[in-house]
Length: 295
Image: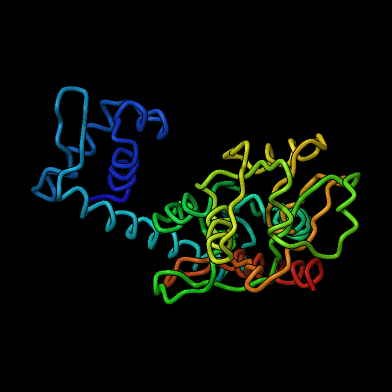
């Protein structure tokens, strides 16, 4: 059983398509098929059910996928430990983020790159639920989201700052001068909201349910930037965290009054995984930036 074979198996298992997996791995399909078959022979079990051109994981394949990912990750950790011992500030970090924290992330990685130009950074933007899948499968090194601290022993959740649930409107709106606003008052407005796939929408729905208030959203969009684009037309309004106003200088966030209207922004790492030196440097820098931006 070779590390290369495990990598091939994992990609084929994730896509359930040998042609696409081979393209992603920059190898031929015949090479991929041969290496997966060799892996199956060494394990004396079938990892895939092959029906024509369709493939599905067997029960053994489902079990092996988790172990294969961990083995690949541990091999990469070993390499990284040696690099850190030699003080080589090189390599790559992959950071996931929800849209509401993009502004903080971009400011941080800009400064990070200036100090450590040899470290490559890959950014993955997605919803909290999508990022959770990626961090559990070791596709990303860490993630920024508004996921609260929990007793999940598979995750290390580090608090960064608190943000407020807010009404987002154009600065020309007369309510933009308000210091706070009640949820009931917002029912008078034309609203566009993020779709339920976003954690902010789930948080909002729970808050509305607790306060026995219903909002009539005319539009739902599964892209926060598009939501803000509509608000910027002056015809629409939305409800997001106050930290979500990225690259929209004419929009104002008016805090919504009431109990439990804040959420904690967090940086999350998979638990029990070696944290390479570059990630420690990134963590320290983003904590510093968050303290300055959201004191």
